[in-house]
Length: 120
Image 1: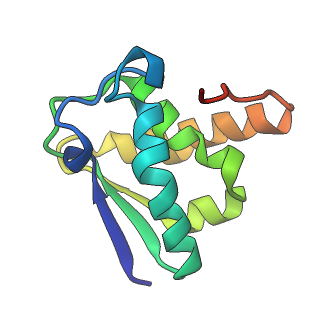
Image 2: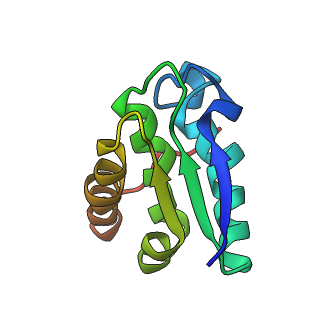
Image 3: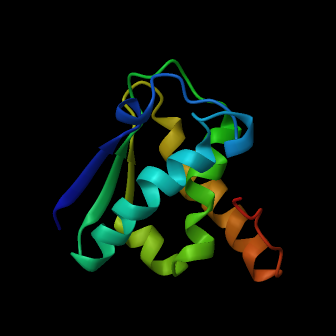
């Protein structure tokens, strides 16, 4: 399967906080502006969304949590796992954290009926 490559660095060198109202470089903003539309494209074209996390100033876990966890509320979980790949040579643990901790945690939250924060 082909990849659609997105780089966080193309969004910002300084990924910041969780929510849009906290900062324009938030994980929530990255999700709605970059991740979600590119993930929709990956699904419709039967491709993999490859997200490159390298070459930024670093990450708050809340940025990554919000940037990827929201996928669970908008897409089928089984498709997320099969159409999303995370790449980081600088911090290879991020891939495991996102795929094996963040996404399953949001899946549990979603299955319990917990609403996500609404974007204003």
